[in-house]
Amino acid sequence: MRLAACIIALTLTQAVLAGEHAGTIKTSQGAAHIVREGARLPADPGQTVMVSDSIQTGHDGTVGITLMDDTRLTAGPDSTLELNRFVFDTTTHGGSLDAKVTRGSLAVISGKLAKSSPDNVSFSTSAVTLGVRGTRFIIKTGH
Amino acid sequence: MLIYLLPPALVIAAALLTQPQPEPPAITDTIILLPDEDGSVGSLVVSSDAGEQALDTAYATAEADESGALATGSTSAAEVEAEFGSLLAATPAAPRSFTVTFESGSADTLTRSSLAEVAEIRKYLTTVPAAEITVIGHTDRVGSLENNDALSRQRAESVKRMIQSAGIDAASIAATGRGEREPRVDTADGVAEPRNRRVEIRVR
Image (tube, rainbow over all chains, first blue to last red):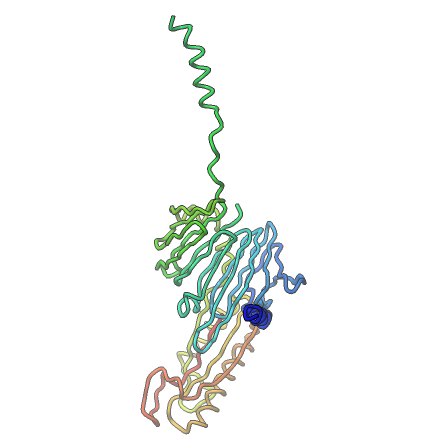
């Protein structure tokens, strides 16, 4: 019973976080779009990125995103990036970030969250999870 | 005698050589730690079902194979450029901030040095796609708290107009005032401090 209540509470939290403004697309080339609640949106510069969005690129596509904590994410060709969680308090710089690359490549330059709340910042693929201590890196998965 | 033994020996040797070797498990994931833009190097901890590896040197790599096993190694700037050059070139510009200063008590007269700076800032902004701009006004501690709140907002608004009049195609531009609450230089109340009469322009 208590477990059920917990699951419901977690589901509600997820639902509340979905659709929160997380960042903005800054660069976009080739085939690229955002999948939001089942709808496909063009991934053009200026387009808002929301929590729970999936960013997908085709064989000639790249997308560069700056999140509100100054984290910069660049998805390479044939990639899928899922922004599962993003919370950032602009006053305290507290919050959390959880992004998953399910295929392709992602370049990351970490932002304020990785400095203020490094334990709450996670990047993952289907096989590995990365803990980040303020840095720049590339992930390539599914090769 | 020996000559008759040679052909069968060769056949056996060839069979041994062509025997299918067990395939090494395929690599599924590669992680590469890059130096930061300022040249410093951070660190990463990569974990899988099979274990954990720390990366803390430039161009260190971790590879996971299909069994989940992690192996560390290293690559080079040249190899990263060859494989990921176009990915890295698509990285958004680093967020930047600028500060311009005002003449005492004025909401729209910039100091001489800041006038030149504004021209540079406008030029920079034309190079930033979908810029998100936050303009934050500040004052020194001459005058009342209320007047300084109003003055700081007016300063921010006038810088916002200067940016807009340059025809910058920004994704958003927000102006706000912080009054005398966030001095760059701490002073007693009533003290004129040119460095605190300023507007910050943050560009993301």
